[in-house]
Image (cartoon, helix red, strand yellow):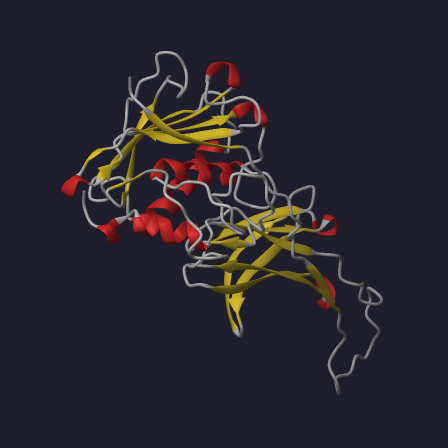
Length: 333
């Protein structure tokens, strides 16, 4: 019988982190100018209310951030979105607000810094509506960098994948939400960014980890299912992740050869990596187990097993320390 090392989690977070600061500007001709006749349209109206929010508010390098602009009064009008630090600004895009007065521009940044996002709408009569928000890019994460634990250790070495080989994976997303595939790709990108371990998609699978007759059709299987279909789900478990008994790698060090992640699709978790109970948070946690991370009781770490508040779903300082120890820096297996 194959022994599987499993760690389960049912957790979520909820914090309000929207940053929006409406602003307005209205103007007449400048000092010293003369108007021989009063304006035919009368006084310049006040600028309409405009808000902007960046989600997530904290991300790792190169992660996508959605800048959403809202203004019912400006429905159907074009709004310019800029991103900057200090005096350096760059136009990231222009968006025409829909009938609800909403529009989104996706941005990303690699350097660690706090970035300001600005939305500007130029209207007739010299009226400008603007608003600002912000997001932060971190390469170090938050919390204690020593707060980590490995799921399996043998001869003083943690079990890990061979970072010099590609890890293949298949997906069972028959019951997943429309955003689930994108969330999985982003979660895997973050793991690759920190470890150097590369993943290659092989296609779909019908198998569900924890179901009768389950077998691996790739190194890693990720599935969305329901408790009645997998013994790894049920109760307070929103998801599970783990790996089979490691084999001996180079120098006798334990090497992971097969792993799984299974998510309870009936939970209806919202997609993305923003605030609250998100599927992105669950995927990062369970992929952490599939990579060899165990649970820790420490603030700001995504590998905590219980519900805790986070400003956004991302690995903490301890999580990152451990992931980097499991990757290319540790050498081939």
